[in-house]
Image (cartoon, rainbow, N blue to C red; front, side, top):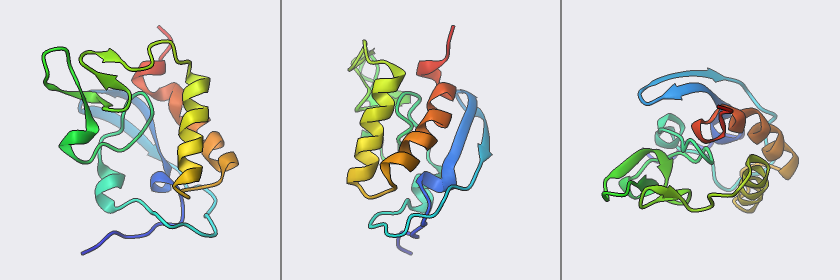
Length: 132
């Protein structure tokens, strides 16, 4: 069965509210539909774990970042985390939102305004951006 196209973003948007490993609590909220979209998330992407830094679905083994010992990190993707550390260690949440919104627009997932609005709701709940 191929990919199912959804005319809303990443997954009708799953907001991660406190994810500590496998015990994630989520809340799903609909977003405004995108009028044209070339790439919609598959069911596999919609149910995949999300990077706790950028919110990217991690579907394939190569999507996961790596720990210092070379094992796969279950919390962060390979764009954000490698060899046990963040690839942009000084990046702010606001910079991450801007970068991810740009990628979402380039991939025609949603408009910049929709992407930023969604990411501003999602990012503060991700592990990397939790205020300690």
